[in-house]
Structure formats: structure tokens, C-alpha cells
Length: 349
Image (tube, rainbow, N blue to C red):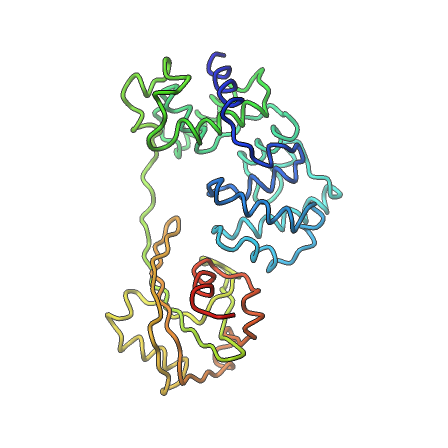
């Protein structure tokens, strides 16, 4: 009990003043939890405010278009989260008459809501005794109790889930869950944790056994895939060439430019690359490099190169996925972050 007591004591003194902590509205908590998945609080907070402003209720969210949701989501990455949120909002309207469920067993049925999110919503909104287990919780429990099973292994996940649930018994679930997550985020950080001022240092296994930099243990990640995206930017005074990405790849359903993906740097095989460009845009086409950057995703590194198109023609019947849209309409479409950044830097729209 000393572990829980010290965490809660620390939390009451050190917690950040975050808007969703001032609410027990399951819808508001759901918004914050989904937005903050794979996202730092500092980055996610403006998005939370923006979504709540545009969709103050689950009814208004359910009535939104996918393009509107994805446009608001632009820059957060993992765009399936935004699509799942729209689907979930509609589920709440259809299955629960617009009343967001509070019970873990009902929440877990909704799309995009897993064990962690269901536990977070049910405990924060309804004080249900369900322990959250996220990266912060894994780290605190692994270091303090000396759990050396990999956090991403089947046996490790089961062990941590059981330990976390045992610790929440007889606690104020909402306060305890927020305390242990906040402690992992601010005190027991992944790198350079504040062990010198830690209220748990006396009994911390990792500190006593010089394993702070070792725990938690995680199995090696999958191999990183490298890709080369070469965007062809065709723009005139009133319109621009665009296309909507297909399902089954990164940034699905978002809008970008005509794209030629190569197996390596296009400048190392420029003749072959130019032949492909001419197949799309005619023999007289000219291309000029504009900018290039490296874009990092969870399991991919994408080398992005932008080329300006001149003297181009395109047969839209042969390439029906490419469209010409008004410049004003193009900016309002949802884009991958690399495209949004390019628009801001290089296109006067």
C-alpha cells in the first residue's frame, strides 16, 4: 500500500493541469485518450482543443464527414485513429442512443477502443476498478518491482496486467490510474529519470540493482523498411494535380500529389525515372527538383522528393486516379503531414 500511497501523494502535488482531467464526461475523456495514443501531451493538446471545439458532443462528431475529421487530424499520424473515432461516434449514436457508455465491458466493444482505453475511460468517468497499462505504467512497474519479462511478450503483458490490477484494488481508481501514468511521464521517464527526487527510491528494484537503464525490457523491433516517394507537383494559376491514396498503405484515403515510388534514390537511376515520368506526363515534360526530406514512421523511413512539373500533359482517362482540382479546394482536403508542410512552405494558396 505504500507504493500506491506515495504515487497518489506525489500526483496531487505534481500533476499537470490538463483540460480532460476536469471532466468526467466519457466522450471528452475518449477524445483525449485516442488523440494522445502515440502522441506527446504537448503535441496532442492543441488537437484535443480543436476537436472539442468542432465536435462538442458525440452527436456532432458522428455527423461529421471523414474529410473533415482527417483534415483536423492532419499532422498527428496513425490516421486510422481518426477514421475509427468517426466510426465509434456513429456506433454510440446507433447502439447507445448517443450516450457514451461508462462500463468497461461495453466500451471494449467499440471500434478503436482496446483494453487500455476502455480501462482509462471507465475509471476516469465512472471510477470503475480497472487498471490502465500503457508505456508509462509498464516502465514504473518494471523498475519498481523488478519485472524483467519483456513488456511486448505474451507472458509479459499478462504478468503486468495482473500486477496492475492487483495494485488498484481498494484504491480511488480514477486518481490512482492518473497518478501512475503521470508519474511515468514526469518522474520515472524513459531517459534520465529523476531518481534523486523519487519518493519510491528506497524500495525501487531498478535503482538498488543498477538496472534503471535496463528496465523495462522490450523485444527487438521489426526491421525498418525504406521507401522513396517522388511527388510530381503540377500546378497552374487556378488548379493543381492531386490524387487520393488507396487503402492498404500509409496515409490511406488522404490526398497527395501524383507519385512515382522508386526502389532507391531517383537521381541514381534518373534515366529510368524520367521514362516513367514521360509515360505519365508526355515526352515534352520537364521536372525541376524543389525539396527533399526524410519522413519517419513507426516501421518505415520514407525519403520524399518533390519535383515541379512543366510542359506536362496528362490523359485523365489513362490515369483516372489523378484529378485536377481548384487550388482553393485542394488546401481544404486532408493531406499527409509531408504534403501539408510542403503546401505551407512552397505553395501560395
